[in-house]
Amino acid sequence: MGRQAFQHPDVEAVFAGYRENLRVPLARLRQLIFEVAEQTDGVGELEETLKWGQVSYLTPVTKSGTTIRIDQRGKSQYALFVNCKSSLIDDWRQRYPALEYEGNRSIVFNAGEELPREILSHCIAMALTYHLRKKS
Image (cartoon, rainbow, N blue to C red; front, side):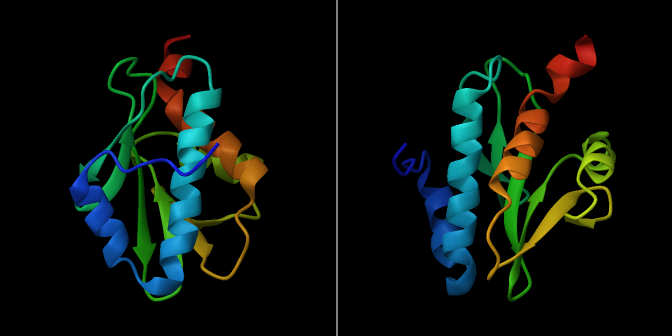
């Protein structure tokens, strides 16, 4: 899959404003979110927008998932955020204790390290299907 075009100029502007050392890792994380959404049953169309000034991903048609947000954290870290009232971070901590978490709201990554794509793909799929799984 090629690079996903930005859906809104304001989202593109946020990406352009990221620190140079974080722009590429955040773009990779963004691309992974789109890839997982496309490959995960029940997710449907993914909307990319801004919430609280952070790039955010919603499932407006199916309402299958909780909002995922991504953003830089300081000078050399970035994070994937989910609703702090969801059980996702607790679930991920149990399954993937080696990841770095911040409270009950995010997974934190260091700019110079490779993304754990397989693990992160599972986490993203869980977030994008969170409401589907809660119903069953």
